[in-house]
Image 1 (cartoon, rainbow, N blue to C red):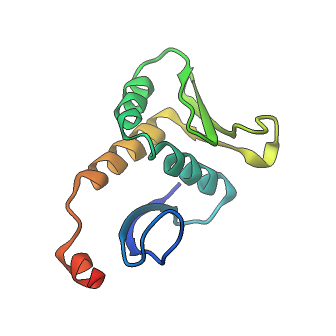
Image 2 (image 1 turned 45 degrees about the vertical axis):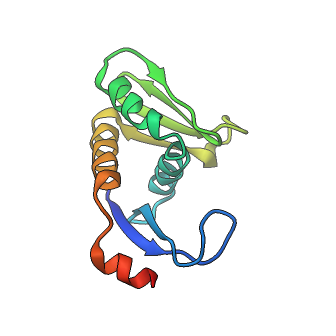
Length: 126
């Protein structure tokens, strides 16, 4: 699995002001599985305090999980099962990633969010 962390300049919508610089995570391979993992990360990103908690839970060996507003995740043994909270049995709304890969991705996402937005991106905002 491969993911890309990047910035983009938003258009005016209900989530961001026009020209606002937004941090994003996307799938490089554009698979359904990776796309759903990205959806989960985007969802839990709304709760910044949960990001470190997710890492703590992923580092443990016992089963646990953490849900966002729309997407949920069960941390089972060495796997993470991601699902759509409104229809958890819908096979098209399920994804799987190893616990190790998810922890690595979450740590990269947290570090990416801590970085100051590049000066070039700030100039784009003008």
